[in-house]
Image (tube, rainbow, N blue to C red; front, side, top):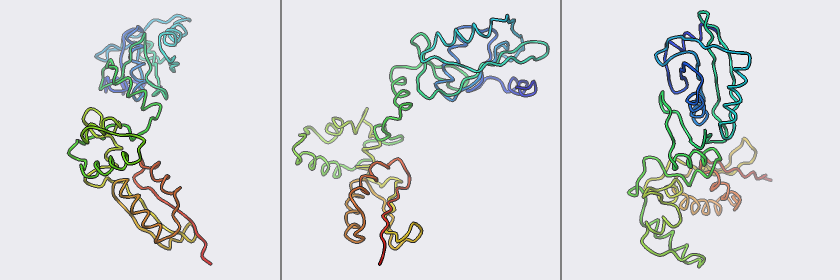
Length: 272
């Protein structure tokens, strides 16, 4: 890092990815943990909170000791990049970490994340959500943002529950909302992404582009469909009769691809 770049960072002040510390201490490691659990960032040791350049005194072993302390006090262990920059005859130590792939990172059993220019101690729910996101748990199990129970259709829910009960594997009791809670389609009285895909009153912005192709570039027949997942499957069954080329594997591919804004089914058929 050049002195010009460092001066520019100091002028802008602390932020979501920048923290100033007069000395290396436990709070420095807490900030690195917060950065690793968020978008990554840098701690500049030798600069106080208001951006005054104080510098730090370093021995030959200082950087190695700091590295070991960071590694030993974090779980999973953080291994940051450390750089020494000379600014106005004073030493500034830049400690940087990227967003960690497996989260959350903790220090002495405590988890932090970065919000604005400060560290936030995560609660149990936040720790759990952070872990699920980093492990890429199913998108459909999360609560749908900006949605409520008013957004789902009671008739569609009733039809869905009736089909489940007729199968005989599960006998769901209670009202519609209680049944969906048992299926984990409603969490904290809010519909999940799966619930919205199945029961939304208004079709979500997920399209199925079904078509019959002679070659990868030549479309013979196609149709764009938009509706809830259940209705889409019925419509695709109808298209199966029309096109005679869509297969059950195509339907499964749709269900597995609901995170995409456009789901494309391709089934190539040679025309004699």
